Length: 378
Image 1 (cartoon, rainbow, N blue to C red):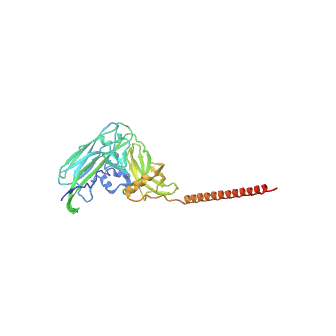
Image 2 (tube, rainbow, N blue to C red):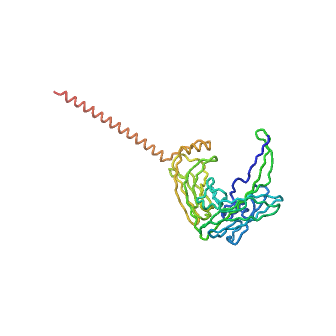
Image 3 (cartoon, helix red, strand yellow):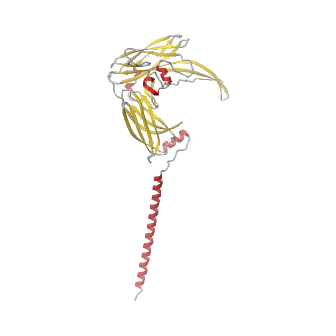
């Protein structure tokens, strides 16, 4: 029996963009740098069907290329253009969609149509720039030709801050077919390559605002691949927060550091929050813990302390997710010393009680003998 299995190698979300060079800084991957130069991205080793080039105008921030970083006025209708090139000798249809600028859960900027993803969300829906961007949904490229695509952006009617969004272009590439034996049957497998490219659009209003970083809640949760310390982080200002770095330490009730490490550097999009995941070497035993946090960004240092409790529900969830038995709390030297001291005090108390009891009995018996002797005299 033959069946066809399609696999989207590029994934459902694009986690990189043309803003990589400026927004991700030194942490940008090599593919991000290539995209910033206007080159397409897709499955490794596959033929690239199209490329995009932003057509920059006089509102562009000086020295920034590869994406739109423009000065705007409140309430303005901004008109931009994108040149889309067909790199094949066949006609190609490219899909286009507007996107919001979110922060990835593990740091960095991504461009997606949603306002909330796993571990990432937009704090203020007025910063959902996707709803303010208009462009054709489908672009037909002639063989080896190019098309200039108009993009219209309605600027929010405010006079301060930076709004971040983008446009995502996608197209299907050549497919490859192979066969494999599945459950005893010969199966034809078709791998369909799909290429995605994101071009960032940063709207810079007349007045800037400083980034405002804050830590959120912290907890420990088991996942199928292990255990995670999850740390809430947010950029609460209408500004791009660049170069965020910091440290964390998970400390138990005895004051022992269970695990410590660092995070960053990475960038956070304006008005976004994430649940930053930190893989743990092992699931901590049940008990009460302190998380000590420090972050450095925009010339400021933010310190915070969070407490969390790991109990039986978390241990059970850990067992169900990993199949491993729940850990047991280890005892420190002072806990053993306290237990020995309590036993000694109990033993001493029993000894003193028994001694006092024997003395009382002996005194009573002496008194009885004396009374009998006095009663027997003439």
